[in-house]
Length: 363
Image (cartoon, rainbow, N blue to C red):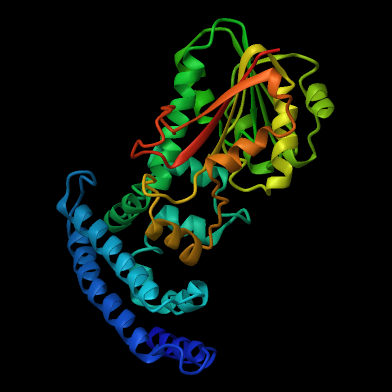
């Protein structure tokens, strides 16, 4: 069956599932199809032009701007249409788009987006995709390079790169002989950057339970300042973590890839286990994506792409929900603040898409 036939069939099947006399489904499906067809004319032309060139400067080439604007505007128009018509189940409504040419020319052509969609390791945001986002990985094909950059220019990917940079800056400021715990470390790029650029004696313990991550870290042949161990964060207690660390106390403990995915009920116990491994006056850092707000650059259209098109679900939390991570701690033993991904404490900053919970141990 041709893609256009699949698309028509999908629209028809979906229309049958709608309650009678609620929305003009035919009109909405026709308008979305027209939006997608218009976008495809532009994207198809750009693809042909890009493949004629021997090389493209993906930062300055005007085709990159045109691709980004076309994809963004198309998604924004579809979201607006769904909101105006009060569509309550976007997932079911958007499913037919998977058979439209727009999908091939935008999402499927972006190497990183395709990786998130295919989920080769069973979940979207695996260690390999994080590396691609931080390193701005680009395939060889000119058109794929352009569409991939569109995906990597999302506020989500940018905040992830900034998160790694901010943690790297934190590591740079540590004094000699510091001990650092990184739980659910993934590729630990900020640690690798530190090891490459500094001879300072700082000992790192990297914990993860993902076999792919552990294999990758061992293959990097990191120097003797690094200890790599397998550990499942969901099963950690204060004593189990202490045993993994051989009783050593940490100057810094952090987790930057875990709490966006875990149910709230696990968060206080994991927070407590990490906090108890700290030396007095030293810090624990935990991050979580913040819920959408007027000051959050993580816009609705991006959340729409991630959840409805890529099937990539994150747990977004408010600052109050992030504070609840501390609920098992004695309030007399710590002080805390919540910062942005730039480690700024002003919640009105336009980069306020991530909440870094920074906890200092007082006794």
